[in-house]
Length: 97
Image (cartoon, rainbow, N blue to C red; front, side, top):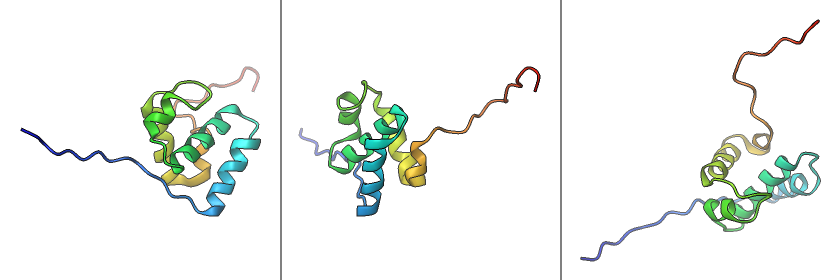
């Protein structure tokens, strides 16, 4: 018996300003991880699936969940999501400080 299944692909539509911000981050950010995350979001906006972006097309191979996480954070927080997350654990005290 044949069952019809539907596969949903996450997509992302960017405004011209959002695309320009991500391209600037991808091309000029000091930190490689920022360039990598911006490149991943741009590839998804261009129609690649997050899983395909994770497999090939970044600085190194990533788990799809990692790329989906970047996409989720970008959709929720915008360009600020590309940066590092705040530390969750207790802060270590520096000697003498």
